[in-house]
Length: 206
Image (cartoon, rainbow, N blue to C red):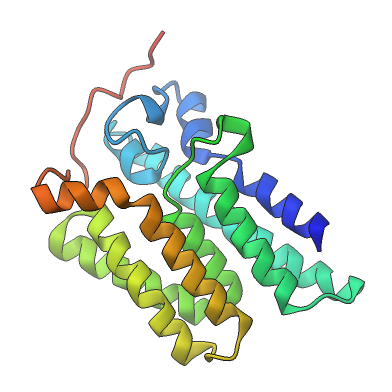
């Protein structure tokens, strides 16, 4: 199981916000806006394609780590526990990536990818919650917080309270909430930015 966990962590450590921004000649997303290497912050450059590629990459790596483990683990006598562990490992890799000085993102897209590996219905419920909130309030962090809080509720009914994936979804929600501590403070003070707010991160820095 250790090999699967390590592999998943390394996959998670691929920060697509940084990789895509560098490839497209944009500034490091950790150097502007919220400082978060995620799709929402990349969108502040005004480069929608970069934000979409970041979103897809971060989400896909979460699913890939879980799907590969689910496919390979049974060959080594491992089951859902290994799959759940890989899901946590890829998310932790995204949040604290070894390749980028352990300064990672807040894990929303990657978490959805992980949940998709657990259950497509669970991921769709979480993603729909984020999308609904984003359309209503136009604040990515608040949308993520609501989706994170409700994800374990969805998991309770979709995968069942006895499933290892229910407990893992609860831990994922706690991790996402933890990474949004600064956003919670900004929300309380009314200082949190909205989706699409521009920044000076569009130009590549020397």
